[in-house]
Image 1 (cartoon, rainbow, N blue to C red):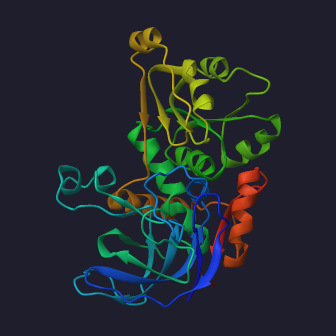
Image 2 (cartoon, rainbow, N blue to C red; image 1 turned 135 degrees about the vertical axis):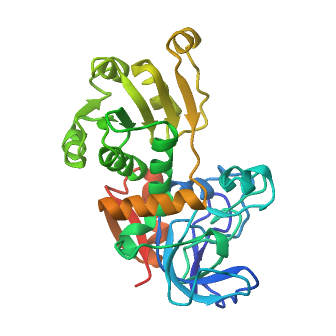
Length: 337
């Protein structure tokens, strides 16, 4: 099979051939249909994960079909359409695992960072972490739902978004676009916060009520003028500073949820946070039950991201374009069809 390898920090991806692996006990061999190209893949090759293993096959937004099953994998059959996600596996016996919050397991392993991921024609994954793909979802367009969609959906619901909530989304890229569409489908009123005024048309197309261009307007002031502030602000941009700039735009009892961030620290204005009972939380991806909920909600509401299919050979140049900030709109998805 063909695969792309990340061989080290700041090294370009290397295209190679290797044997198709065989599943052992508890493992699922997936013939990969598609794998989304995520900003986390770029972070891997830029050295942002000190626990990463090299060489590694990147990629954790994976759809495909079951090609073979190892012993002891219930609920799946050869030929089933499935997805594999950011969370490769966890210990299975800590308090977080037994309560269904495997994403919080201290011993969790991450697909495409410490175990081989989806930039390959086949991949081995753990049975309990492989999720059936609803038949309503196109497998190429659905690949980003396994990370970008999961992160957006889970972040919104854990921050308390409900029908009638005012939800502000910072950034309308991969995670942000889906966060806007999920919030609209949840019955929330939605604002999008971007840098330039030319993002207003896309925000309106996605269903947002309000667009705030931070080059022209203070986002916190704009949100305060929007009915008294946002109940939930979800930061999808890879910038802690962008999130901090909106904190004053929270309504009392509001929540800022960090799905995107960088290495900069977050400084909090303590007195207004105390007086208004504000919260700041972070939300990493999700556990297997969160993945199922995300896919089911997406299928029910017809939510799929805008994607541009690419070939495996184009993966190195795609990551280079992302690093240069010139990858264009929509999500790039490696298609093996």
